[in-house]
Length: 194
Image 1 (spheres, rainbow, N blue to C red):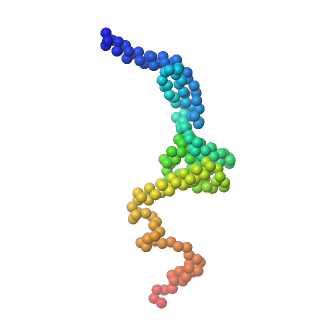
Image 2 (tube, one colour):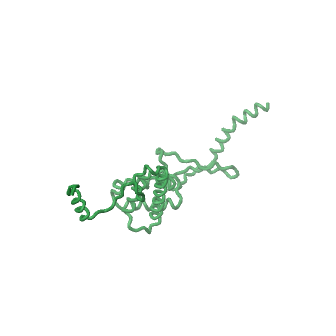
Image 3 (cartoon, rainbow, N blue to C red):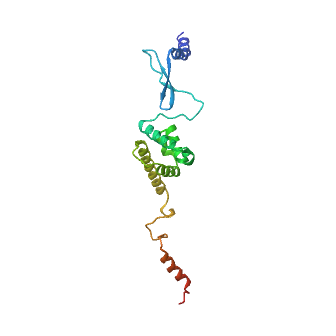
């Protein structure tokens, strides 16, 4: 008998959980740009927590902290000021999309090339750095670029680097004047035996 009761109890657990779920209240809550379904259980019962709402799109925005929201809002405002900015400055538009969908922590996953170009585009657009979100974004991009460049330098052996300016074994480049050019041209024209 006890075996049958334990088997019956095991079979009833999913049904009682479903009954408890059906007795609960469901509410739709917006967190940033993400919608969540929140299950509120009747008093005295444990909460099921919140379940993510299903969307047709797989690209759902991540919940944003206030700093990320500020960076995203200021960057979005900046990109909206001019009609074709998103098309012309695609790297910066990509950074805005990453902030919106994945948050500031995802900036670290962006390749160095894209980060560098987006920072250059940001600097070309902004004249007033008093907006806290834009200033924070510039700071984060600069720090990320410096860190990724350092990682790249550390990963390459010293002999394979293209340019190391403080060495005598590699070609040194300096700017010449027109008189330097004329002097070099005279040296090339004169025969070597004279």
